[in-house]
Length: 400
Image (cartoon, rainbow, N blue to C red; front, side):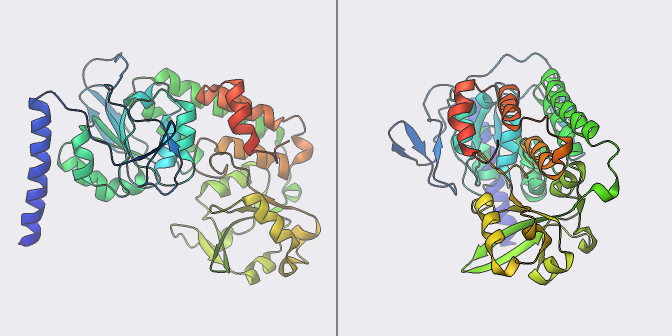
């Protein structure tokens, strides 16, 4: 009985907040406490203490909606979403928000509609400030914020990764706040999410441009690798490396994950798929299993460190001596700028190109990776040559 009373009180408070906001001129929403260093605002509630665009008291700037009336579309998770109009106040919340934010920023002017966002990790804060420094409002939600923290921002739409649709999405819908889920887990899901964002933002033309850009690169790669025989595909192992208190552990991705797809599309043969029991999440393995597979190539990702340095460390480890990948100097760390190129982030297309040049170098000699990086940040995020040279390329010294 106490639980029901507490839930009723919470919903009542939220409803009163919404009614109060609609019945009077909205006052500026107070952002969470921040500390200021020079011209940067640092949000202490996020996991990484990096710079974010400055929060000001100026009113939210929005773009003129091109479509009047309600919008109905199917999001990337298969749910139907109905909005009374093109959303002008957007909140990004829940788990895995860096992937969601980096994806919606592919659409110009969307950043100006963000009234609040929840950040998790990686260097998303710094990157978003680089992409759109004119953002006026960017208060940070606390980690795992619920409807009572989100509702006061009066969002027209809350965007979440699909893993947050259950608990958070249901709670928001109960108080009539529209929620859109994004999947992003494979290239096909990525394209579905882009199409859905195009409809939600009334900018399907931009969605078509994004998809055409990715499709063009995928086709170029598939054309280069056409006719590749199975015996010409090296055995490849993708490893997630982690270290805790001196204890090192390794994991491999499930078959359904992007990393597996990337290996296959880059002309390699993923060697670990036989142990996938259909679970959700990376699969723990030991050194004995790695030795038994004895892959010709190993690709390493270290989400808590430098993947390239980690690969070099494994190459020099006596424990790894004797493996084919070590003998042939074929252990590689995934490149990363503001995020690793193996992640379900728009940068996966760069990771796909890089992996193809490593696995099938003779078929990809004409791919200029640095030129591809410049083109990507031009076309997808509108960065200038100077911004790319100063802020992106220095993070990619291993890319020739």
